[in-house]
Image (cartoon, rainbow, N blue to C red; front, side, top):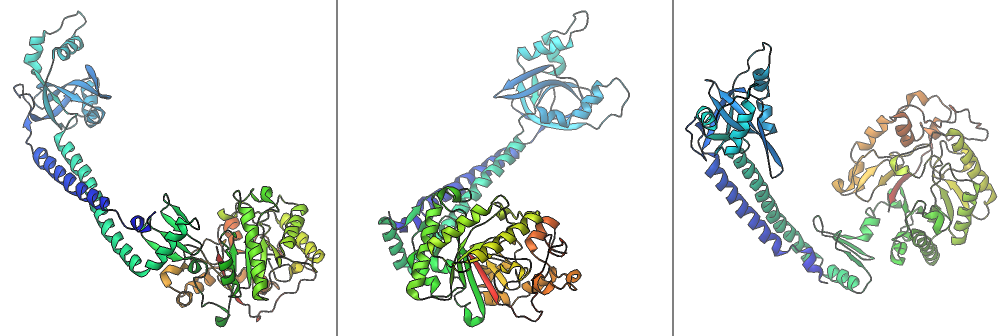
Length: 545
């Protein structure tokens, strides 16, 4: 396997492009110039065979014969010009539609307004005996009298006008068709030039890295997916399917290394754990993230695969074990290693107990249950409107927090108000999306949180989060979610109107109160201590991997 052959455009691409462009452009122009410009003469009884002719149709009788050729039907008619001279013409469905009003007038037994004649074009062909036999049968009167074939020939002529083939239309069609192929060829040529230019730049700049990728893939330490057009090792991702890109995985995982505590910004990470190598774990933990959460949605392989693919449970568990091991090696006392299961209304106390047992077994610091209103289909923005179920789950998590207080941190991802049951993440109050939290997705999208699909910008456009913060995007978002109707509530400083995603899903917009507002739902708030208005909350950056 030679990586250089794959990332560079093959010369065959250039050859094919040149052939397509030259051949089809030439053929298209030849056909169009040679046939489309043919002159059409007026159809008469004496018009010769294989002549382009036209007929100004003023009357059209019913079809007297039908012919099927190459799966296409065409019908034979007697048509009259503006001087009432009859001719045999052939029409397909499209041609008949253009003469529909004229035929309706011809066959009508009532007085209706005569439509204007319609010009038809075609190629003149010789009528065989069978055509005249059908015409004879069509014109036979009640007594069985009809015209002889010679008489018919003298009336309608020996030839007919075939309108189902129009050289002008075919010429234009050919030009369009060949033009498309020619353009395709030109695009291939451009792609070849641009891609090779980018490839040369990559080869010049990352020659050593590419050699390492090739070495790792050949030795089985990396993979090459030809169908997707990517090389993947434990350090690099090389994509060549849609333009050539070489990305160091460290930059995918940590695209904003300067956004650390020195800038007063707290950063956390959510991952499925499948890419957590020893090297990557060491890199992340040395940055002292506030927490790294690994998504595990079941206590064993069977229960986990209800939401995840086969084999992901083992990989996620191994990822947590690596984090715990390397955290201990580094003496990191800042970062919390979290097991993060997604819960829904169908799960009972057994699920929570078993997830806690798994977290204890892995020696993680915390089990962080995702929002109880979030279901299996949360990626589609689905939120339960079962308020009672939500608060029952809150009560359950609170009781488990007390039960395991000396062994493990048990918490909920978010809470409608800080202090409620004392199970919310410390420092988080209400909806912090776009205010104390920013989510950066793998494709560069910046959203208020990982669940909120409102795009505030794209990291790739700004080059740094500092540049993004210098825009007014966050200010515009803040105005969008302002809740004056909640200002007088004693919990406003804690809640600030609640979850934006839930309101978008259930209410259609971000205005008004959260559907699970404890005030609106008459929830007992004994023991809840609202935060003060002037409490300064930390700034969070969440990055999903």
